[in-house]
Image (cartoon, rainbow, N blue to C red; front, side):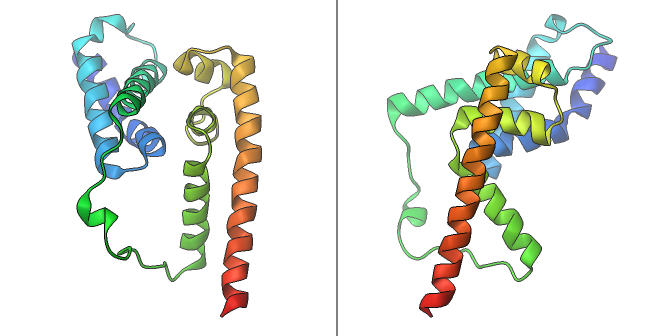
Length: 172
């Protein structure tokens, strides 16, 4: 039993990274990871020891995320009053690498959630198409299609961001 718990805890960094890619908010991502771990520990007998728990945990997290999205659609999204009023409190990063990374993350957040989750599982988390298909509960061909469309959507978002940045510089 302790071996299983240790293997699950070893996956925390990957779970956090995937959760942040899904929900776009650090606190909500941490909540999603906690919910995932709670559910995994409650159903620890559903996982075969000796196997890597990553796919099992990502499947749990993906299903929790889908449930949250459905819940939000029914209820509507809430916005913090402080976030909705006044100018943004975000400052631009000074380093070019930070700007590029931020643009990629923003572009990634702008693509469709189903494409984003497939892209993150394969490109960031290193899962195979078959493993990502299992996590998402869809055929491997659909995963490949979503990744191809997601990459194209990501390219388009990055090109648009580059054009907007160029237009800002020209306007000044």
